[in-house]
Length: 173
Image (tube, rainbow, N blue to C red; front, side, top):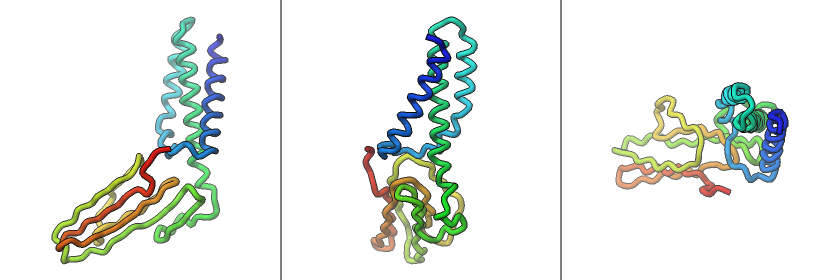
């Protein structure tokens, strides 16, 4: 079989399966992280061109097609949120829902000088979590994510703050 046929076959099968699974909401991953791997397509395509006449040429060509399909799907899947008119991109103080799968929220707890210590229990799925700067609050989070939100509870136990910040859905479909 020609490498060209393997490339395009693997490309369209992968892209079609990704869109099909996404339409039925069985994919639970924020695909914008895959954009970082676009150079892998170039590397695999170069390897496919280097190995002439061997079984590895088709393998690298097919793998390059899969990486390209994943990268294109990641671009289409994450870029759709930039073209909606339902969100004010300058306002991070309110809970805003773009659609049923993408949410923005702010969680905060004022600092109480009576607290001598604090303990944070944090439970969430895969994603990017950044600690950017300090504030005058005990706890402050801007959340931007897909599909699932967070629950936030603070308890005072003898001048000891206990903060529970949990992902609302803790199972993978």
